[in-house]
Structure formats: C-alpha cells, structure tokens
Image (cartoon, rainbow, N blue to C red):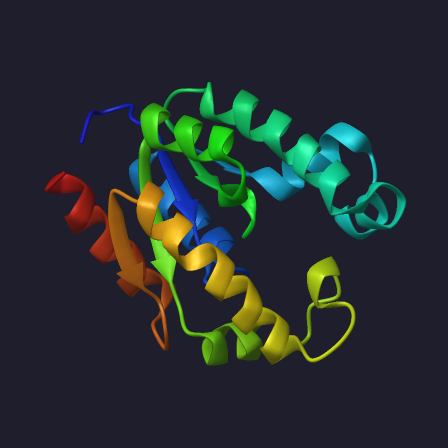
Length: 172
C-alpha cells in the first residue's frame, strides 16, 4: 500500500466502520473522518433533522458533496454512511481515490449493534430487522462491487478486524 494512500470503509450500519476506522487511522498515523459527521458539521444539524426536512434524497445530495470533498484529501481513513454506495458517483470516487474496505456483517449482528441507536432515520419506523434485511438486499452487491478488500466483522473485536485490514492492504 502506498504510504499516504487513503482507506475508505463501506458497509451497512452496525458493521463497525466508525470504531474500526478510528483505530485503523491511529495505527496508520492517518487522519480519521466520518462522512455522516462531516454532513452534520457542514449543515449544523443532525442527520435525523435533515431526513425530516429534506428526505433521504436531500441527505444523499449532502452526503455526495461530503464524500466528494473527503475523498479528495490524501492520506485519510474515511468511514462512510451505510447508503453512500447507492450513488454511482460515490462508488466511482471511492474506488478510484483510495482503497475501499467492505466491512461485511450479518443482519443479526447489525440489529444487535444498532438496537440502542437513536440517530438511524431509516430504522425509525417498522421492524428494524426487516428494514436491515431490505437494505442489505439492495446494497450488498454495491458494497462488493466497490471493495478492494472484504473483511467480516461478526462477533469480532475491533483490533482483530484492524489487523486483518492491515494484512489485506499490504497484499493489494
């Protein structure tokens, strides 16, 4: 892996992108960014508020702008939102501006990890497990399409996932 190459983490909500990203960035000595946090920083409001006022389409436009800016930085680790791969433009930017790691996890593990979260607008109504299943059916192929490396996170500690990512990046 190039010394200052960026690493972009994709995967569903609850796959560990933020926790893994923070530790991976520390280990590599790189800056860490989270695209959802960047959207909130740029707008001054939280994501549920954006969904409420602008809907998912408005949020996705703001997310696209944030991903465009963040992937233009060199030598970073970026945790993307679970739906970042929905836009072809985002997938192209991620795939060409850095190394993309897909943090793959089961719906059962996702449900366990996000059950107490309050900032998940897509899970605000209905059965969360059913919604997570529907999201994975639409997104799994897109995560795989953009990924240079896939790492399973079910039942694993962050340090173990980071070690596997580092080994995988060395072989790319």
